[in-house]
Image (cartoon, rainbow, N blue to C red; front, side, top):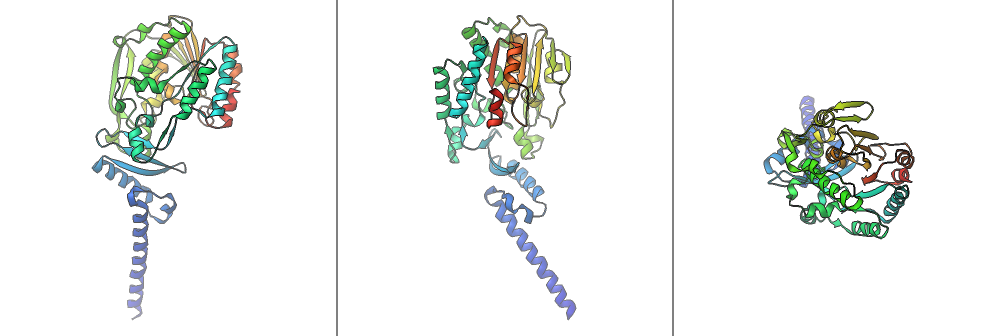
Length: 374
């Protein structure tokens, strides 16, 4: 008799546990909504998320997912036909008023030194998918950007409008960025670079050789299904979702000295595209500069003595190799806290090194980062 009671009690406990487990699974996976608060109640939670994500992605090729990373939820959308992943969020382009004032103050200091200055906004991928964002009740806020450019114009601060540049290009929006990442493709950066060089010649009379960037001066090294972007890593998707990746290599001889912690010498392919360690199969992040405190590019075959300092984030990685073909030296500095961590006195560095041009191509967050400009 006692044995029967114990057996019934055992199965009752198993039933209650199983029911509670199923309740948590269903509750946390309803509408693909992964509630981080409930994960401690689910055994093998991470495996379930990974499995559900893979199955849902492969079967439907279209999804909207809440995924937690660094204690924040990121909602993603993948188009059904291109597998292009877009981050769903309200997108604030441009700078707030006090941020714009900081940039103007910094630019004025640079110009007072007799050094040219130009601002470029790192163009966000989501901006080009207004229809998708609207479908999920997210918005693009352009007022900051419009007001920022207006303030720059009023204060005689030169800028390149990257959003307008890409919007009016003939590049299909699905080809502007890597499908598995938020970074522009190298081909997109090539387009931006050519426009930048023409603007520098027009506005500052640099007389940079635009023929060095002509289409027929390059060939591609194609790496099919090899680029593991940020979103595919975040969602733990397999290689089926990798992007194609292409190096743009000049048909003429190149010779560089590239210095980060150490200096390496070689041609563009060896010291720019293939020198740094390849981590997580992300070929884009392998390009030096824009996540390091400072990287110095010296073009040994430069057609002039022009020197540029670029204050930049990772969006610059696609521009640097191409722009470096047209000038003698580019110093790429990342002042972001926790990423580039350039801790030296930025103004003093620029004053002491006296470049021809300072390019501002980054987004900063918080006083700690903006203070490095002041």
